[in-house]
Image (cartoon, rainbow, N blue to C red; front, top):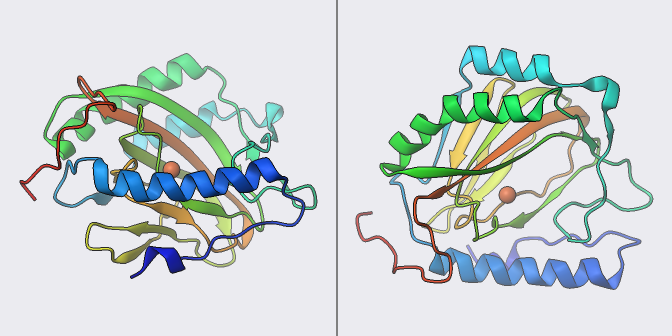
Length: 226
Ligand SMILES: [Fe+2]
């Protein structure tokens, strides 16, 4: 598959800055796909969210403070003036949720990558709205090396795939159901939701990790174990 032919969508109403950002995203894909070492044999893997964790996060979602997600200056999301915005669903106690999420996922991530990992950050809950897309991208090389996407709830008319391009340059469509999560090498593998979301909502939480002593400016050559 030639990555250059993977569709890139530019929305009506986008300014120069967002279009420039989209070009930057394409550069990051090419560089990081080559430069970031591989950590796992599987590269990505789906798991059920532990039931207690799923229940806890859902209880922590504060719908009374739900608000439109700011349209970032980058071109990752297809938000535009004419389009329904995604939403942010704040958490009632973010610090507590971070501790609970990390205490549950940390050992799983270390087992999955077979090395010591450090919690970096968490984003969300993001509620994708009808018509949403997420451009093909790689995550920030500074600290989002291995990530978890937790799908907490969804109401869709058509299942909405996450596309991941793996080391063999194969395109994979990953379908998460509510209560499922995906571990994946997010700084290396290009991923996105390039098809428009058809449905009412799709609620994701994103949790990011990096290897212990990660130094993105001095990356050692690709691991030869795989
Ligand atoms: Fe990402």
